[in-house]
Length: 245
Ligand SMILES: Cc1cc2nc3c(=O)[nH]c(=O)nc-3n(C[C@H](O)[C@H](O)[C@H](O)COP(=O)(O)O)c2cc1C
Image (cartoon, rainbow, N blue to C red; front, side):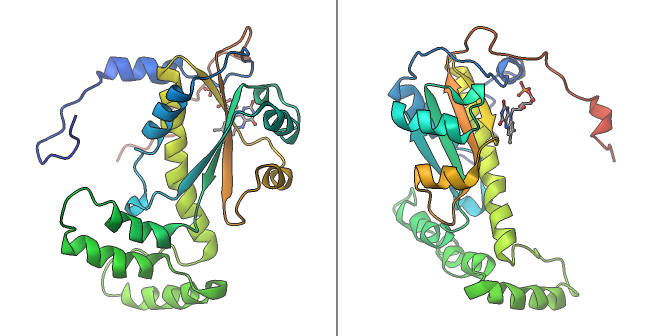
């Protein structure tokens, strides 16, 4: 399938099939000991990174933990919760620190023989202006004031212009990749549980995480075990969350 076409997209999954997949995913807290094949993990990660992401700078990384000794340590880091007793845990990390290299990578990996000038310009000038906050975020501070002035004349994107906003920027895209990852495993017949119930300081030590990386969730993966789902599905009425304008 070639996803690069100026023709309107033809849906390849029926709404019913997509709904069935989404509805079948539950947070599963008990897994069997069956290992998840490497090919399945790879396929799912490939689908994860097809998630939409800001400026295609792909601000994420994944640590795939299969080593039993390391999994044992992660179980402890996750306060010994059941869901963390899985044969596979993927640490999903948001990376607000990789945008500079990513600007170069877009050009390196551009999938056509010639990189269009608008792409070269965007990743050489516009993106660095948007994402560089400077030492101690001082450039961000300056940009905030500049944008405030310029935006008096026309609508402008006002963020990110601080280190904190860069973290939020990276987390948004990475959260989308996480959902892709869960649905991808679900499509292969493997259950998942996203976990933020962990001790971040210990997690950083155990996985030797880069200082700037933000662990947004640990994803437990495996075949669903007996009594793996604790509660019936519950969602609030849609109208409570939706405003129709
Ligand atoms: C960011 C995030 C963190 C979560 N952390 C945990 C966790 O640490 N332990 C756990 O058992 N479930 C965790 N969950 C699962 C939620 O409790 C679960 O998704 C929610 O209750 C809805 O159930 P469902 O996913 O089966 O529809 C987490 C989910 C998300 C999205």
